[in-house]
Image (cartoon, rainbow, N blue to C red; front, side, top):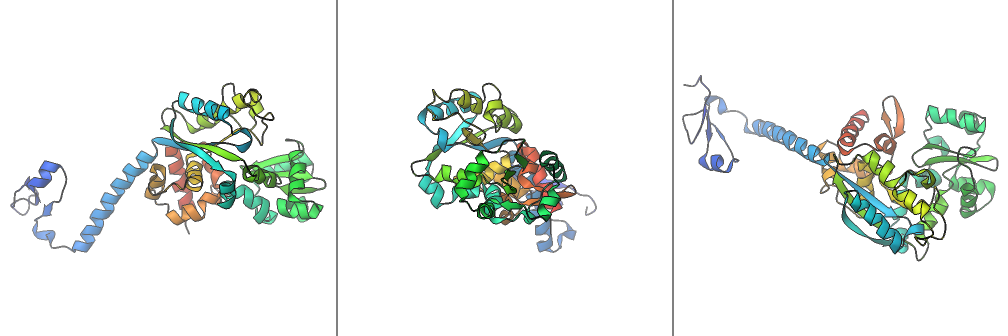
Length: 370
């Protein structure tokens, strides 16, 4: 009966014949034996592959959202055995699994430019980009005017804003000397944060973008120094990324970090831990990835992790985000169009859990599709 659809195992009279081997193993091929099966095999194969691919992609994306993997390292000023022991104990006691750990020495950091890639956006704003190339959000411009008593547009128009390299030249001092001046600025009085890794400080009578970077780099590349890293993971349902950073790690300023957080412990126990000075906002003991996406970028840089083999990386690729876009653009924290304006990619993804981060990455990619 050619008008009735039916299927069967080893049934050559059925519309769809399922071989016995396929039935036994629960997988395999099927035979379409209908008279209308004289279709274009290439078009049918394309449809089958597309449908199967979508199903597999959905599984890959779901898997990528279930686990959090972060990159944590002890900064050079705090890297000793006592701090290493404290950090590892805190990580494991909170239920995190340490997948890998080790030391990376300053000569390797310098030679491979690991710190420059790590602080890509910060370094670029300090050295490569000109102020006119930077995006300062309207809210940040209002905060700038409130702090300094002059509009951002006015100081730009008057040519009073410089990146760190040009600022040092304008002042007739070395980048290191500028770094020392910048370190002396006071938060909320002479320096303002525009966004993640984006600061503007008033040095003498000019405004300098990310003037701290030169000193920051030298701390990682000075002979005899090193970092100590931990690659950690945990079930996303057990701890949110916001809690990982806010409660386990602690905020940028260790003096305001919650009791028991890593940065608070290093801040309060600095002397008995063998540090030469009490941590501050710049030297705050420990770094940790700000989002699952940043974690992937950092592991790709510091550990040369394979994006196509990493669960979160595979989920990004399965979401339709091309590998070249990730490695050549997104890992450098570009400004992207989203929800009516240009914003830092890293800022948009900060503190999101893995599943939400994947979803937003896809939305951002669609919003910036050329």
